[in-house]
Length: 369
Ligand SMILES: NC(=O)c1ccc[n+]([C@@H]2O[C@H](COP(=O)([O-])OP(=O)(O)OC[C@H]3O[C@@H](n4cnc5c(N)ncnc54)[C@H](O)[C@@H]3O)[C@@H](O)[C@H]2O)c1
Image 1 (spheres, rainbow, N blue to C red):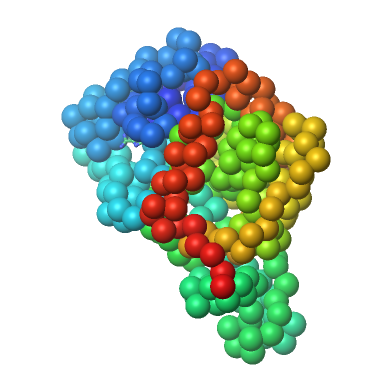
Image 2 (image 1 turned 45 degrees about the vertical axis):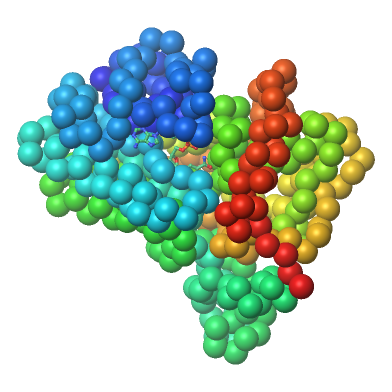
């Protein structure tokens, strides 16, 4: 098949392209090679054999031409990071998706599948259970509580403790500009897909880990930040009390999911979580990274927190497991592969300092009093 991959020069996109080429598909990439991910133009790891078009996913003429030549589409290009320009998230992520469907319908194209990248961020603070009041979808934590160092969410009805549950796809409760745009994108894709008979799948990735994850994003997760600290001989700061829970999914498991839903008829028209299946506290994950570098220094808890962070979230991955997918790699596998990729990369100390300074300048990192 001729497959168009938007964002195919990025982390998940390039690994997906590798697999598609391996499977014998003809792959075209549309990627704007955006900063901060692509500081030096075309990345070295770009899949050999793909045809790269450097351009914006919101460029109607370019997108039309590429869609005319495609039998199927992965829409992975996105505006990300932890930035205050809210309109850019909707503009890139939602508008580009609407445009994609607009062109498919206007041109009477019939792609066999459109796979769009959504995110766990669409589920916000996720699903909890209060022993007395049952299932709860808590709202974001108030800044006043975080300033006092009160990290845990409590039942919105009785303010009592709640049990964290794996969050299934039926939950949509995004609470930041990125999550809202990803949920918007998902709705546009799945609903327009259904209305116009375009087989569409939205995948809500959890925190994806592996080589090629950009070292330049200010906010790109624990894997990058912890690896850089331990590699450079230090130890990372663990935000809040180091007990926030997340699930981490390996890039190759993500690619397995991407190719599974590409052809499985049962996937069409649906949204799936793609996660690691197991919750890790930040401190536990830091320990995985610490062991990789043979350091004896655990992460430090300093009372700092990141404004807007979710307390805990673990995706329920049962729906995709029913189709035969399961995560097969561990966070330790991801960290080992990521560490190998970082080896010998120049200027890492400057990159770490710059990312940290940016987060502080934006007022994202704050301290409890
Ligand atoms: N990495 C994760 O942990 C994660 C988690 C959840 C969801 N996702 C989603 O997966 C997708 C891929 O993420 P990634 O981690 O590979 O990110 P990435 O930044 O490595 O790749 C994104 C690519 O999109 C390109 N791009 C950005 N804006 C563009 C535009 N306007 N036009 C054309 N190209 C543009 C960038 O140049 C980049 O190559 C995104 O949609 C993201 O929201 C990623």
